[in-house]
Image (cartoon, rainbow, N blue to C red; front, side):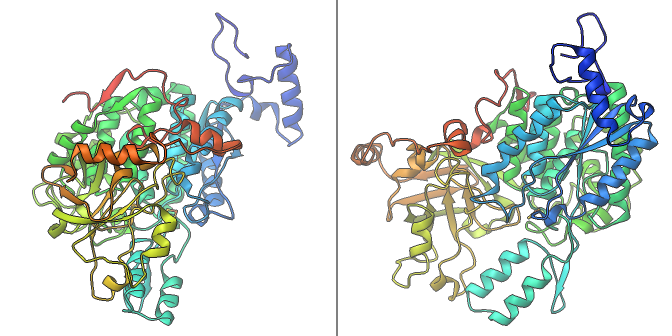
Length: 583
Ligand code: FES
């Protein structure tokens, strides 16, 4: 180690010296090598701010990384620090086989170990696309290096034949029209060119936008840092200010354990509910909290949901896009409305509290994107937690994006055993399915798929889509994109691949969904379920295995959705607090 008992902790280049058995030689050697890049002793004596660079040719959501890093460096130097960028894994939703969630924990491990291995007094985490911000914050929580989150910002919206469009709610909407023969090949090709008109993250309140807002609510991002679009001067300014703030955080010792408290996570959950945020946000917040030894209380979360209205009118729950939320004053406009429900004494990266930052925020003005709490988009929080014999450890539904007429629904199950089964039979004209049936997809959970892909929004079977059916109740142990909508029950836990009750559902069973009672019930007797379980080829099911490598690590250690799908050995060794803590 580079620090000696009784001496102040090492900083700058003296941090984390490579071990050669001679501390001063280790420092001598390190300086000799880095001087090869042209640094002076003056530069090397400054506080070092690492910049996690997730720019990648495979990640257009991070396509502005180069410009942002330049601005961060400027900010660090303006504050008297030395910026040093370093690469980590980068994940893009559409460029990650089998699914980005499978790789989130790998990115978290990569980032955590780099934060430990490289000498830095603080770090600016540049993320953006869905899994990158959770991975970086999970890493920061565990490494406990002063850290500030910077996001790449949302992409612009496009236009298709006079209609404003944006990824990826409109991707799904137009694709559903194409499947239902409402638009032709020429039009779907034209839409494909319009959906993503610039670099940056998805322009709706999908997972990336959700996690940006969650990071700001947690206090680990600059106030006002969540919403500036990727290609704006505001975004560049946030980057410069983040660099400056990182230097201040290093001096003040503002480490993640001072920010990521139960109160901060409760604030983040409030915001997630009020923005109509992505269901994925629940999993990621659970994983981040788990790193800090904080357990998310699902029952209390559901109570919070009942008292937290959806205020933000963004797709998929509403009408607008992220650039509109930014123009409406950003997250501060939402936080101001939520004030009575927030812990205003939670600390932020500035060293001031959330309440103090809200007092400093620009004054409110008339706008149409964020509703007052007295006139919400939806009276309850966007996400409800369901329980019942089909999901003993819980399931969730994004009620703000569901169809009102399906929220209390009993229907006949039409079961697909796995993704391959779904693909081969869903559009078969001979498939017996009606609009009032419930589509059930098994084996797309954390282990089953593996990686819990965003396949929970099963397409409407073609023959029903052609009849104009737009929504059906759909149930799975998987996830869905934050940009998707419909009456979709997700994260059924325990998953089918672990022998959860979902694995026992058969076509023809009756299933009861009652969002008002928070219930998901399989109308099959316990005796019949026990009989089915006993008749399985192996009971309990042998857990899926992998022969080697990361896949083996994943299969052996990934936890279920109610524990954030983190690896068991990466969570805190003991859960010492719950969130919300005061209910
Ligand atoms: Fe990157 Fe949507 S694909 S944010």
